[in-house]
Image: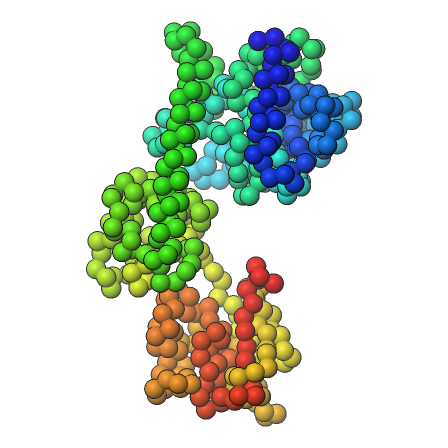
Length: 447
């Protein structure tokens, strides 16, 4: 493909896809490693930006510190951006090997975090992955026994943590990119780690994919076409999943995104059950369960006795059942007790805040009383307004249908040793006052 055709194809893809991105996205951010892919991408965008000056072009270079040449690459990227008059931001990250996670995966994770941190929230982040990368990703997913989502590999336009990622060269081969670079004398760095076949991707790149292309004509292009078809099918399945999730939320007792009504789940076919649970977990930004774990989740959620407690670990989170609903539960720190509180605001150790308001609640504190905010005192007793008799906090929170894992997180207001309010739920009848005060919790992410 001639250079002019490469730019024309690139420009057409760019214009078409930029129309689908939110209109406030006027900043184009290039992830610039210094390799031929990202350098050619930067040059193509530089040419595009001259014709479309309404966009702001910038670059970010992430230094992983894994190569002895890392500082040289940083200098190369800086000189290149100075030459093209493109603003450059540089991030230096520390990549530490973790158990059961490859160095490649950790470096990629750190790279994305740095890109998100240094770029504007509304910017479009451009990545230089191309058709050969797509084929390698497909084969890696195939090797892992991935399903449709994994085999769909990389999308040209995608969202991650609310950020727009754009890979405009996905239908362009490495050979075409290198030919473009050579024709225009575009300089780039060479990462020596890309030659090390100890890494699975490099092994496929140097030992496997060339043989497949030699044996089968247009192998890469055919895989790319198959991936496009898989992505279309995945998109259709996502629409069905989202429709099921909307129906599930309508039938939920508690209108919460972190729960699924088991009765609705049980009404679906097995394939749609599995699909809905995967889609729901993706909405929670959860790790995806293996096929075996997914079967365990469905079996325990649907077939266990109604009063049976289930707790299935997924990463740091758990799936638990309460009142015939399946909950995605993230670990939460129980706040520390706060004694001798004064003023109308109490800062809790987990970042939440308790605020005092005037109105129907409990009487004001007497001069000889001490105010404290305590947690997890489930055996403390209280006689709530409009409730028969006195009973424990545990009883009343169960009566209010508060899930077991949430009960220790409910703030309890004490005057000396007397429980006067279960925040958000009950007022002590013996302390109730129409012209009194009540405490209200404001969660950290809502402050």
